[in-house]
Length: 114
Length: 114
Image 1 (cartoon, rainbow over the protein chains, first blue to last red):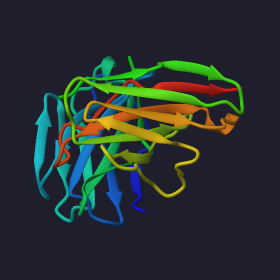
Image 2: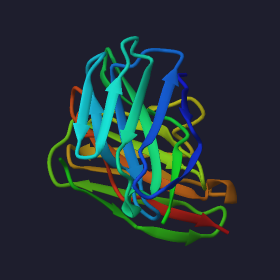
Image 3: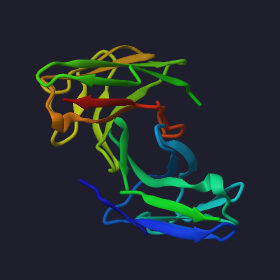
């Protein structure tokens, strides 16, 4: 099956710094999604990308769907303490039966030092 | 986006027993999915819960171990059968309409098998 390579695995940054993380795949996806998961909670959708080359923003978050459909990045500008958590990329294919379930990256653990 | 309620939120179970997890959605949805998140790991798709037909399982997951029901467009259950400590994980329900947008997750069921 598909595999997503997400990097970095963890990030230690200072409050106010910008953050960048990315995902690559050996196969294409129709949709890329970025989630944030806080302890004890399910993942919360941050940004969804549907077209190759698409660049989408959600507040301080910006994500892009790579032209090759095999990669995506997520940027967070001016990080704040509540940005701490685990960020997951996820890819989705549409098969003949409809939308498939998601394939997830291994996550980027974001730690912010005051 | 849909609101998902999962029950129970957590449980501690004896090995060899079974646990049924419920997923209730506040609106009718086409696609429902079940995921497993092992401790400190990413999410892995278990199966797609199909309304009115058998679930579609991913490689490594079988119906005898993880039977799934989907009696209508707002409800599904996942049973973890004949549990062992290796089944200790977070189990998450997710929904998504055709086209894949609005992939929302429940808050998960934290299962510990002793």
